[in-house]
Image (tube, rainbow, N blue to C red; front, side, top):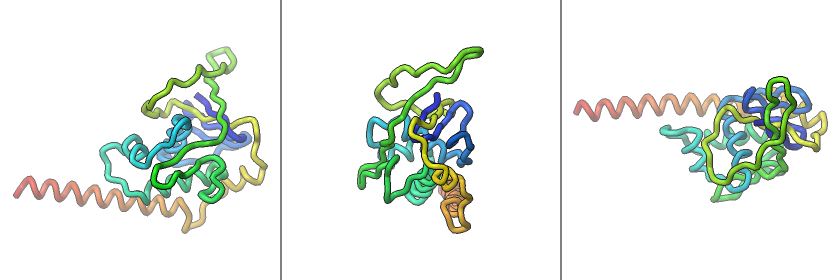
Length: 183
């Protein structure tokens, strides 16, 4: 499936996001957060749901999710202030609000066909979904800004730091569990 919105294309089959034909690099979890929000754009998705669906059986703090959302927003030319594509509902969650067009991948030797209307209700996200950028193209400057490298203190560094912290907490918890079993 490909999702098209505001000149962006999220292609879950190819596992890529592009803007006006130029690929935008995303970390795997950032891609999954964006795909999940787009798939469930008909409703507000809570932080707890995002954590349960995308980090199952893992202890992840709000900082990790916030860093992912910041990276998602930056990749699609959005911000926490403008919220043109992802709105924050304080105390409730997030919702993808940009107009989205769904398109099936082309069958061998064929052309892409429009997707069937999406079934209602939650479905587990897969890496076999895509998001294709839509009719209203963003300015070239917006695409360039979304592809610009992050500063050393930007979302990338914050996400690296949080991922490292998660690994340390996991090791500590596993060690405590083993120690308790021995006692």
